[in-house]
Length: 209
Image (tube, rainbow, N blue to C red; front, top):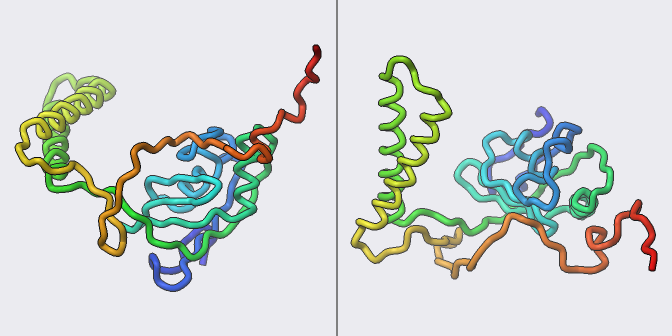
């Protein structure tokens, strides 16, 4: 089987992904960002169908084939991510993600589904109108108008919906609802003083009094 390809179906047996970090992944990555870090870039390239990829020192998470994957971050990847965020020079390497466990998911409730449909209808209407215009309008302007129309339609649907229901709900694979987190940040933060990211840069100039 070619490298970087999943070799089993989701959550059946020992699901395994082989990930290779390339120089291109390193060049495109952004430090201290769970969604754009070097490992996230490598996973996005290795598994094109994966969405909502997040990498932290504790877990790696992404959605693939309608399932939310969550893996414990391998120790080698933890050190790699910390070194990258600290600004150390890093080299390409590879690792395996094994044995995922189901993660809770944020899904649309009926009220959110209705608003989502209104957003899609409004967006498609703008693009359909643009296709009939002569001369053809600027694609960037069409995209901007479609985005604004979809936002307005979504907000209008939520405001007009009389149902006192949530827009989204957090669901766990066992079917139980869980208490949602208050907020979530994409920026990685490090709280332990011994971690490399919290130390002075190796090439930092000495402090003079």
